[in-house]
Image (cartoon, rainbow, N blue to C red):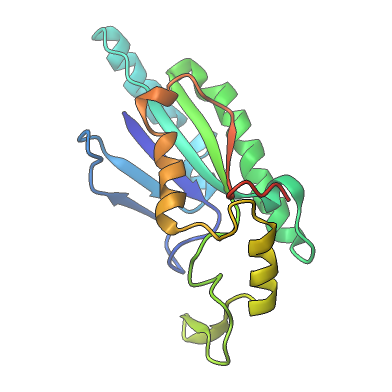
Amino acid sequence: MDCTSSSTTPATPGTTSSRRPPTSSGTPCWTSTSPARSGSCAAQPLISAAVKQERAAGISVCRKVVNVSSIAGLVGNPGQAGYAAAKAGVIGLTRTMAKEWGRYNVTTNTVAFGLIDTRLTEPTTADTTIDVAGRQIKVGVNPGLLQAAEQLIPLGRTGTPEEAAGAVYLLCTPESDYISGQTLVCAGGFQG
């Protein structure tokens, strides 16, 4: 099984694409921070050629693409029109890729995250900044707003990075081989 994950928001500023160590099954896993890099026109010739070889050899491989979005792409978020539009675009890309790549036995899904504990969602303080290309950018969430958001989440808390990774992993398992074109919401029950 090959698994690809992409996001419009890079984990590290300037990151474009990297190869991670093989998964526990020994298959390679690629990550990309831009849907255009994992989109239809860039990889389709490679996948098509691989599938032709596999079919000639009598082998069937289920490949998986898991794109990363946000619940903002499903329900919007005040003050984040651009962000919500980009994340909605990821969902549309996922659905299109599922239709285009299904014939190659590639499942394509999205995980839409809610509030997950990261350095960008920590409570703000006077010195909560990150360095981006030599510039200090203020990050974080107003503590009062963060507490109010947690009260709206049915599980009563924000998600952990491990839980977020678990949602992506779920769509990379063989048990999800017949799931494609779907958006899994990982938000502790919060629906917006």
